[in-house]
Amino acid sequence: MLEHLWAPWRSHYVAGGNPTGAVPGEGTLFERILAAPEPDEETGIVWRGKTCFAVLNAHPYGSGHVLVAPNRAAADLADLSKTESDELWDAVRATVAAIRRAYHPHGVNVGINLGAAAGAGVPDHLHVHCLPRWRGDTNFMTATAETRVLPESLSESWSKLRNAWEAG
Image 1 (cartoon, rainbow, N blue to C red):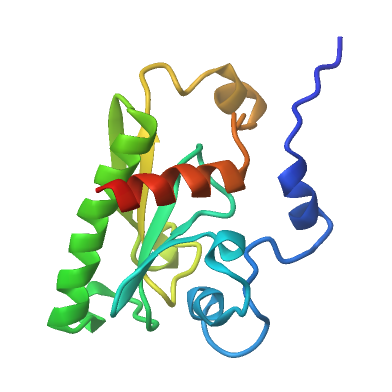
Image 2 (image 1 turned 60 degrees about the vertical axis):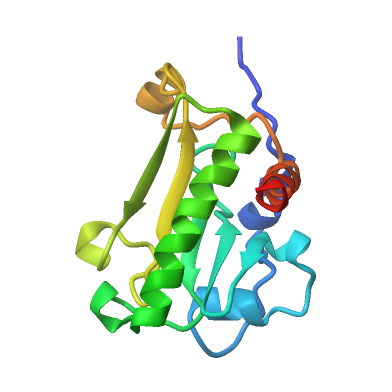
């Protein structure tokens, strides 16, 4: 029997739309997200700092997948100022704490891919991936069907994380 997995928030992406709310134009994807006129709830921005911000991944590996990035495009860690570097890593720690408060995971992945050869999807603007993990969260769907099942919408993830961030 054919099974259906419902992920209605992804229809905009499949239709070629703009799921991040980023305004078209100049700059990297992350710079355009920051410049978007829509409210943070629509762009997925969970936190804004002086030099960095945290945003939901519009194409998450799992619920609660957050990207932490500097406000300005920097392709490599060496391109960051001391102030940006300090705030980036402080924001990563705060993001992990918010993920733990919001999701109570068994663990958290934190990772960064520098350059296209390392797997960076946005190689011109570094970003740190932070995502909750649970024992057994990798199953046959990902391994054999190349499908991920997300149990909540991006708006639900945003609300959980924003509330957890503010509670910290």
